[in-house]
Image (tube, rainbow, N blue to C red):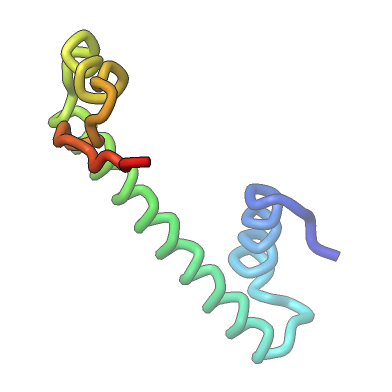
Length: 91
């Protein structure tokens, strides 16, 4: 039985594959685990790259919160989110 949780499973697989060489596993299981670990590492790399890009974008697009009120919270009645007049229904 394998441990649950990403960190525990990762440590278990490191021991099983790196330190024990996949002992007691079939060649097919070794291949599947190696493939899963490679995909996992690629996802971790891609997530880290996205996180860095998001942080960079957020810093480049920081605004003074006092200047944001009119755009987001203080819109006048009848204005859409882009500041244009909304279509009025006649009853």
